[in-house]
Every structure is written in C-alpha cells, then in structure tokens.
Length: 330
Length: 161
Image (tube, rainbow over all chains, first blue to last red):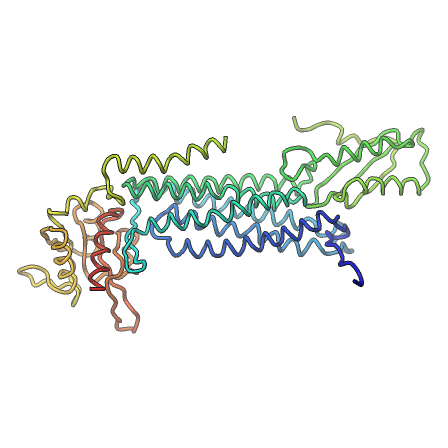
C-alpha cells in the first residue's frame, strides 16, 4: 500500500468516511435505478395496449428516470473546486437539478390529469384484446397486470435503500427520488385495479385509475417544486426530509455563545445542497476584539461540529443584526 | 393516512374479483354485453368496398376474403350475419353507437380510425404498391373486450390452422 485512496469531495469539503461510503452507495443505487427503470419502461411499452392507466404509469416510469440522472449529473459538478467565477463552488447544481425535475413532474402531471379527465368525461371504453403468447391467445390485460406487479418490486426495495443514504448525505434530490420510488407501488396498484375493473366490464375504472395516478404525479411536482424553491431562496436550513430546522444551526450558536470572549452570537445558515454555508455574527465582551488567532480557533471549532459546515464566515460586530432573531414560521 | 389508504386499496382488487365471480361474469367482460348477445343470435357486420378484401356484388351477400372470415367466425359462435353497407365513417359511427358488432373493409392496423374504433390483432399481411407491409385488421366496438378476445382467438387459430 502506497497511499490510501483520496476521499470523495464536495468542492473543498472532504467527506467523512461514513458520507464517503454513502455517496458511493448512492451512485450505485442510482445506476441500478436507471437500469431497472429502463427495463421497466421497455416491458410496459410492450404491453401498453389501449389502457389510459397503463399509459400514465408508463410516463411516470419515464419521469422516474429524471431524479437519478439529475443526481448523477449534479454529482459530477459538485466535485469541482470553487474558482474566481464560482466563489461558492458548485453545490447549487443539486438545487438546479431539483428544480428542473420538479417542473417536469408538475408539467407532465398537469397534462396527464387533463388527458385522463377528458378520457373519463368522453366515456371512452378502453379496448384490450388478445395477445399471442407461446401458442395461446390470452387477454392482454392479464399480461399488463403481471408486468405492473413485477416491475413495482424493484422501486420499493431501491426506495428504502436510497432513503437511508439520503439521510446520511443530507441530499434532498435523493430523498425526493426515494420517496417517489417508495410510492411507486401505489401507482402500480392503481393501474392494476383499473385493469381489473376493465376485466369485469367497468370501462370507467381505467380512466379513473389514470386520473388518480396523474394527480399523484402532479402532487409530487408541487411538493418538489416547493422544496426546490425553498432551497434556492435560502430559507432556513432544514433536515433532509424538511421535517424540522436542521440542528446544526443551533449547535453552532451554542458553541459560539459558550466561548468566554463572546457576549452574544447570531447565525445564518443556508443549505447549498449537501453542505451548509454559515455566517456567524459575534459580539465580543466589552467590545474588545480578540486577537486573530482566537477568531481562527473559534471558526475551526465550528467547522469541527459537523462535516456539513463547509464554508463559514465569522464576523465580529458591535451589535447583532437581528434578522434571524424572530421565528418567521409559526 | 397514507398507510390506511394503502390498506383500503389492497382490498379493492379482491372486491372486484369477488363481485365479478359472484355475479357470474366471465372475465374479461363486455360493458355492453356484445358477445352474449351475438352468441346464438345475430352478428351485425358493417361492410365497405375494398377490392379483394370486400366486394359488394349489388345483389346477394358481400364477397371477398373478409366477409368469408366473418361467416366462419359467425359459424363458430353460432350467429346469423346481417350485413350493413356504408362508408368507413358510417361504419365507425355504427360501431360507436352500438348498431354494429364488427366492420370490415380491408382496414389496416395503422388506420386513422384507430382513435375511434377498436381493432382486432392483425389476421394477415399484404405488401402494398409502395412495397410497405400492410397488416390487416377487423374493426370492433371500443371496449367490448370479451367479444374482441373471442374474435382474436378465432383469428389466431385460423392463422395457425
């Protein structure tokens, strides 16, 4: 052994071992997703027939390719070092990927809701006939159900695994992707119910199932769009699943106020994608500016709190700016 | 919330199948009961002229390969055929309004009418004057899947037979 292999980096941030491994795992999972989705898209295409629910489920499968592709492309960009033109690095490429994915979901969801709604209103009876399989003519609907059932297994497993990695990496695109994968069985079940409906002569079951799936896609679009816009407009950093404010902000504030030369501290944290950009305002006791070495130690102390504190500026002030004082959100 | 919806959904296929078998419907079923009506009854077939495939002699029954197919199928399901002449548009509308059970006229599987009418699987192929392969189909009412499956099975057996 000459040298241990270099750890993966997010810009200038070298990842801890756990995150480094999580990143490699995430990439493997996303490649696996692309592979399994490609097979799914092909299989579903082969049995597409005249079912609106199948058509919508098929388009959803194709849309599910977007988050893994976005993740892998953004993953290439964020490795780059900051330069003069990009002083904050390339972390925001994750946010851009998230926004693009969200808008596609929203647009497609909207189109499909209208399309399926029109189908339902026109009382279009889905025509599904026979298909010739190994010397036997069977109803294509049974084949559709089989394909839907089989292809819904992989996303369920992959979704669970991605969820774990998303938490370790603090990756919202991966989280959104995992969440959609986990909900994929609902799409498959809705389509299966639609086809079972057709099989007993309920022509509207197909369009109704299609409408339900389309509303699901639209809903995913709205949710992702809100999350992506929140990220790009520098709202308070939240946990990877957006459930709560990220604890790292409070820890930095506590760390700084705990220092004996600090009278008061206030921080602003923005989420750049995986890593945080932290601005800390500190008021020294009796307005006495400590030596530069002490400031440097304080800054390094903050960065040691969490690997996500990637870029940190420490600003000694006479008085706190007070913007982040009030809790805007109820 | 999501989980309870999930559980409720899981019950739906079971209900549908129970409902189906409980009412004694065979699956797939026709929303408008075409196959049940045709079997041992009358098969109303629309015809439009297309040399070779459908020829209308003026007096007597339509001739050509496709009326022949229809007569064979009618024999299988024990139906008596009544013929209705019309343009392609009239036939497609007849299928939609439930006035016809099938239509023939040398139709192809890439016909622009596929948005308005149901089709069987191709029963045969020819090469047209441009050297392109044409796959020939029969038109059926949209969504009458039991009837369509019966017809598809007949066409497949005949192709092999």
